[in-house]
Length: 146
Image 1 (spheres, rainbow, N blue to C red):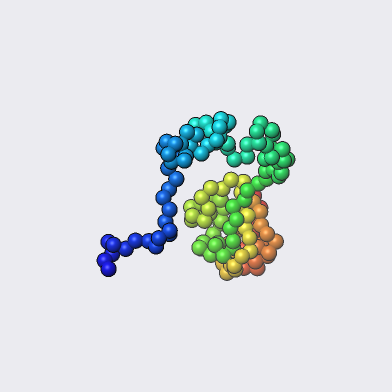
Image 2 (tube, helix red, strand yellow):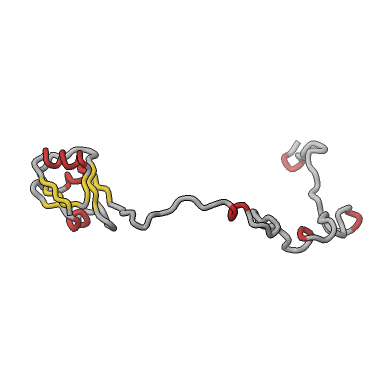
């Protein structure tokens, strides 16, 4: 036995259906598309969700939710990230951007209390969590809301 003589078992494979190849094939004339109608035409496919001109389901159902125009997006900075500054440093928007802690500040900065802080820093930000304020003050620093 050689690899080039191996064949699948009898009846294991089937020839593909050659449609539109004359009456002798059994699939000539209409090429298994039936008579007339949208599906018999060239390019005659119906888009998903099309319901024959009736208002489709995705347009009949109401829209839900919205994005409030007044929502503010704060850049979140944890107090553990403030350890990169020297003791006694004044941390404001410019200092945060220069150190690479934030690149695009839209509506302001919010300081959160994840981690711990050991240095006395003056932190100027738009918002603080209450526990972040406590930890900064406990470390000997000051908190200023802009």
